[in-house]
Image 1 (cartoon, rainbow, N blue to C red):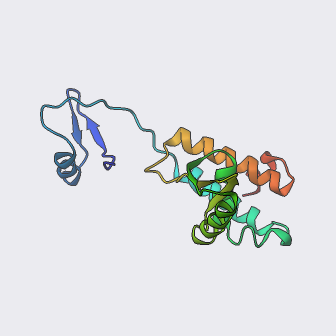
Image 2 (spheres, rainbow, N blue to C red):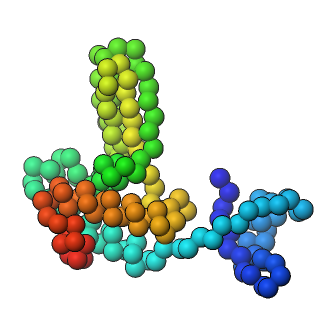
Length: 167
């Protein structure tokens, strides 16, 4: 995947925002080729930090019996992303149910932020999507943030609005 670059509209053309980006543009694009541009609205740092603030607070409020399931706030966030539908999925046919169970256990121990499900002889591995600025635009991030908020609030047994106001 190419690196997103910032450009400045100068009334008749887009120009790279700085000399470093001009060098990257030369590496990524071919002179004379036609490219489609799409407006990308960067999400605010305030919104990004807000999610991590209430997540940390929520994680510290978890009942003790959930501590092994969510040993860190990052575990809670990644599992909530998966539960909210923000995941990448791979399926592997292990050949038998017994082999699928063994494979799921192996994956679970090796990939601490993924969820391995067994369906007959099939192992389904779900990995949380990245919420980084590179992979999620403003709208996608807000949708995933709202999904995580709903899931975590459900775990705590409180209204999402209450959790969102907590931080």
